Length: 182
Image (cartoon, rainbow, N blue to C red; front, side):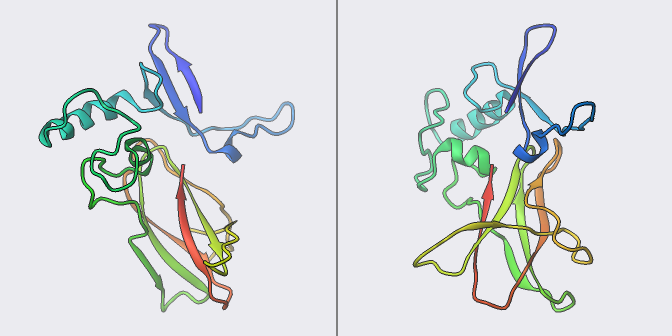
């Protein structure tokens, strides 16, 4: 997380995936895709989001200021976790999950995942051979199955909201997958 202050003193927080923050060798340049959002109270939640959530709170009769640690919809996820996931903290039916997981008949050797994405977030996929003795490890994936797996993070930009499709290589053994968002 980066923090920026504009000439008028307004503070912005920016999210950058860890691997994108590595500069490299002296003299090299690195382009960083940083999503900026103002965060006047420095609670890690964008001011613009607080404005929209206050409307949702009002619609459901929730009084008081936004509380990141509370669970307004009673679904077991804190309001802050729902902010990160891009789900509505006032709607227990809105959950962060893979929307589609399928073997694409036209694409051999990959499992297709359709995932919800929110602006300024990084997504990764973990796999384990067992749920009983889960040894989760991050695995590479691709957005273009014509290429070899090339990414471990899917980084979203300032305007991305909706769904993206990624392809995870399958190795023939039974595997369990989970989607992770930061």
